Length: 298
Ligand code: GDP
Image 1 (cartoon, rainbow, N blue to C red):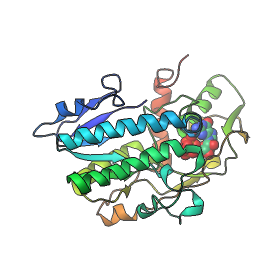
Image 2 (spheres, rainbow, N blue to C red):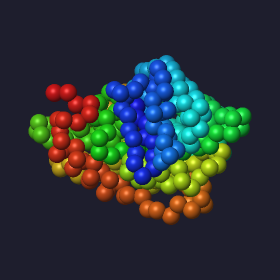
Image 3 (cartoon, helix red, strand yellow):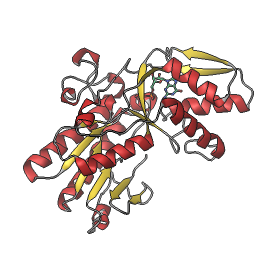
C-alpha cells in the first residue's frame, strides 16, 4: 500500500505507511500542524491496476474508506486545509456519461464493474469532503487525476498499472534475450497518462488557489491506445521482438477521457510533460536502478 501524507508549506513532511498506518489511525496529522504547515495533501490509498482492482474489491473498499474516515476527521479536528486525490476511473461507466468527463458527472451512474469497490470508496471521499465543508465549514477540496506514472512506481506485475508493468516486461525481455512481450487485453482501450511530477505541481497550485466545493480534473487529456503505448515503451527500452496480445486478460474500461477545462478556467496555465518525454525519464530511472525498484523481487 502506498500510504503517504504530505503536509505543505516551505518545508514538506512525509510519512510512509511503515511509519503510520492510516487504516488504523491518522493521529500523526496532529504532529504535522505548525504555523507553516496548514495544508494536508491526502494521496494515501490502496491502489492497483485492473487485475488487483477486480480481485481485491473488498480490500480496496475497506482500506480506502477507513483511511479517508481517519484522515478527514484528523484534518477537521486540527482545522487543516485538505486536498484529497480521486481518480478518473471512479467516473460512471460509458452508458451514463458524456465524453469528455466533466466534474459534474461524477455521480451520474455506477462505475465500471472492474473497479467498483475502489470507485465507490473514492466517490465517498468526495461526498465526505463536501459534507464536512457543509456542516463543519472545513476547507476540503478534491482533485481528479487520470493514470499517473513516473519514477518510483510499483513494478509488480500483478498489482501495478500498465506503464510500470510494460516497462518491466520489455526491460526483462531485452536483458534475457526473449523475442516476445505479452500485453494484456486487446490493446484497443484508450487511456490518458499524466507524469506524476506534473500532477504534483498542479495539486500544489490548487492547494494555494482553489477553495471550491466541486472536484477538479487535473490530468493530461492527451489520449493513446494501449497498443500504441506498448510500441512506444518497446522502442524506448530498445526491445526488438514482437508484441502478443492476451485477450483472456481484462481490458477494463474502454476509455475515460477527461476534460481539464475547469482547471484552465481557474487559471492554471502550465504545460504537461509529453508522454514521450515522461516515458524516457521513467525508463531511464527504472533501468539505472533495476532490480532495486519497487515491486521487483529477484
Ligand atoms: P486501468 O486504467 O484502471 O484499467 O488500469 P491499468 O493501468 O491496470 O490498465 C490499463 C489498460 O492496460 C487495460 O486495458 C489493460 O488490459 C492494459 N494492459 C496491457 N498490458 C498490461 C499489463 O501488463 N498490466 C496492466 N496492469 N495492464 C495492462
